[in-house]
Length: 276
Ligand SMILES: Nc1ncnc2c1ncn2[C@@H]1O[C@H](COP(=O)(O)OP(=O)(O)O)[C@@H](O)[C@H]1O
Ligand SMILES: [Mg+2]
Image 1 (cartoon, rainbow, N blue to C red):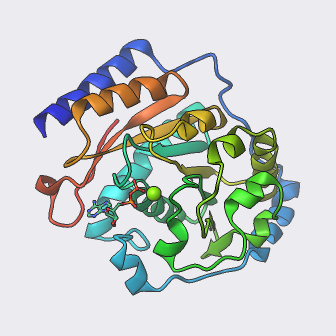
Image 2 (cartoon, rainbow, N blue to C red; image 1 turned 60 degrees about the vertical axis):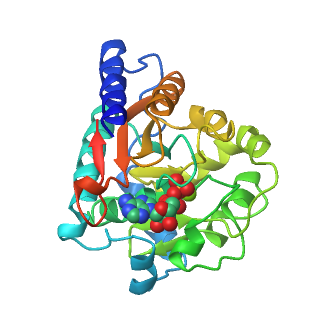
């Protein structure tokens, strides 16, 4: 435990010493014009609305749908993230980790729900872990088309994504996709993402990514995002894995910080520490 915390502290010191990559464009998009507001509202309204069942969410440790003690750690994470992203004009954040099972999807969902409790924000959560999709199962959704098909250009976003409440859209996959690396590096992806963003004007786009040490998909996609959060699992991620992944990721995008998850000593419920 101490080793992983000192690795995280080291990574943070290295980040602040080298600064964030400053040669990258600060933002892909600018705020929509007021005249676009009606068009954007209409696009959101047209997304099919779902209301995941409370027991289903609780079973998957999704707690941030409403405020309270349990959700405080995510609300702090949200506030830090928003502060960092707004300061730089960033919208797209990738959530990744060294290995599988560190809690990326759990944190991505909780963060998305926490952000969406701020009614002035529009939030999009998109599933990029195409080998091990889990968001639909966690939310109890059964969509006809997967987000992989949207990225590929063979399905429309509005036939895949669902809306929860008024300002949270979630794009999931029902089944594993065959060649995710090829797809994620494919020529269609940047245009598809831009088109979605110009129609829905999200303030924050969260990408639930694959793990870094299992495939090259996250690195293949890193050029599409403005920044990333690295999730480490207290019980299973080693200090050197945090080191290696933080360095690799920092070569491709701006690393916002490392979140230490599944950390029992931090509390009986969840235990998240955000080491910005
Ligand atoms: N803080 C936590 N406390 C308890 N269980 C957790 C926590 N974070 C994640 N889990 C559980 O760990 C498993 C893996 O989490 P998941 O979010 O699917 O990881 P990943 O997306 O990184 O593969 C799930 O069963 C999830 O419910
Ligand atoms: Mg996952």
